[in-house]
Structures are given as C-alpha cells and as structure tokens.
Length: 286
Image (tube, rainbow, N blue to C red; front, side):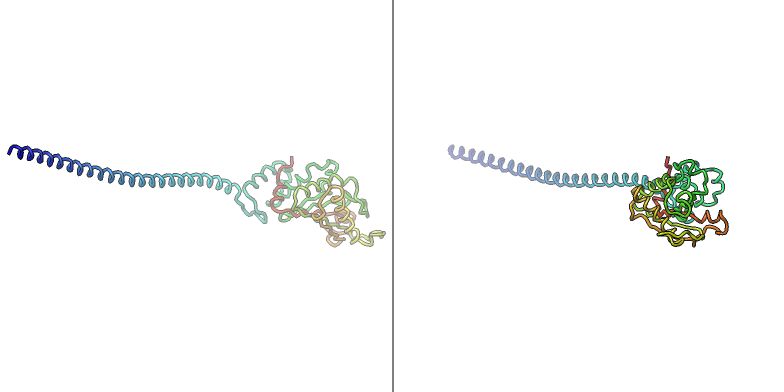
C-alpha cells in the first residue's frame, strides 16, 4: 500500500514535469514565430525604406539636373538675347554685331558719318575705314583713286588705273604693291572667300600690239595681270580668283571728257564673303 502511494506520487511528479516542459515549448515556439514574423516585417520595411530612399535619390538627382538645366538655360538665353538676329535693311545683324558696329563707328570720319542715312551707309564707312587703314599715306592722298562700296555684303573695291597701270598698259606699277599686298592678306584670311577682278576701260581706241587688239583685250589683260600678281607674289590660292574683262561697256560716267575717261579706266575687286566674314570686316583691325 505504501509502495503504491510512492509510485503515485512519482507518476504525478513526472506528469507535472512533462506538462511544464510542453507548455514552455509551446511558449518558446510562439516567441520564435513572433520573432520570425517581426524579422520578416522588418525586412519588408527595410526593402520599402530602401526603395523609398532610392526614389528620393532619383528625385534629388532629377531636381539637381533641372536646376542645372535652368542655370544653363539662363546662360543660353542670355547668349541668345545678345546674339538674336534682327533684319535691318538687307543685312541681318545680332546685338553683338551692332555693339561692334558702334565701337567701329567711333573710329570713322565723323563728318562722313553724319551723312550716313542707312545701315548700309554706316557699314560702308566702317569697312572702308578698316580696309584703308594701313595703306600708305601717299596712296590715300587722293581718296578718289580708291572707292569701297557694299551691296548686300558684297564688298567692291574700285581702283583707278593710275594706281595700278601705266596709261594704255597692263603691266602693274610697283606703286600698286602695298595695295595688292593688303588685298591678298584679306583674301588669304578667309578660306571660303572668292574674289573677282574686273578690268574696265574707257571708250578710246587702244594702240594695237601683239596681245592687245581692242579694249576687250586690254580689260582682260589687266584683270589677269592683277590675278597673276596676287597668285604668284602674294600666294593667293588661284581657285579663289576669277578674271573678268568688261571693256568700256560699263562706264561710271561719260567718256567725252578727260576726267570722265579717267574715272572709267579702273579695276574693280569684287569680294564675295559669307556673312560671318563680312561682319569680321567690321572688327577693329588695330
């Protein structure tokens, strides 16, 4: 009987111990599951935060690029504002070019400037001043010997025959060298430039020679003589040059007087620049 009581107590103790262990197991299992669930939620939250952070970084980069773009746009707009083109007569100029013109006009003969009626008149004065600058004083003593005009960016330099040739001859005078050297430097400064050299005569009958039969021959020989000088002495590329003889059929004035015939005997240098090169002729040549 006593033995049975002891067994009963042991059995109850074992059963109680077994029940406590199972309860603890269940509790631990529950804690584990909660930990796994919390970890999973943390991982999801972390991924969400990382994704959000990536979105924020992308937006920051986008905003920065927009700000930089706006800054660049402001610079570009300022440049465009300064360089926007306006049509004035038959010539299109930007504000930058107009500023250059204002500076250049301050250097020209102010008496002549007062008589300038149009933009073309002002441009004519500037280009004439810049092209004539550097010519020898004795060459410029008589301004009628050199006339520079502009027709829609085509620069035309008319030179009297007495500055280039002896009367009735197509041999170039040595006193023409400074002028031709300056013209060659201008032509050589621009690869895309083309130059036509026109010979003009008066209507007087010329003395016939081996190569001269009439004024056609004389006008052509004079233009080719200038071209050969530009090519052979001053290294102007021949593909830039065009020779033309006009004979006496494009007179500036009547041929009945000595003075009229003198004006009609001339060589005209026609420079055909693009607009950029033409505007460069407005710049200060120092």
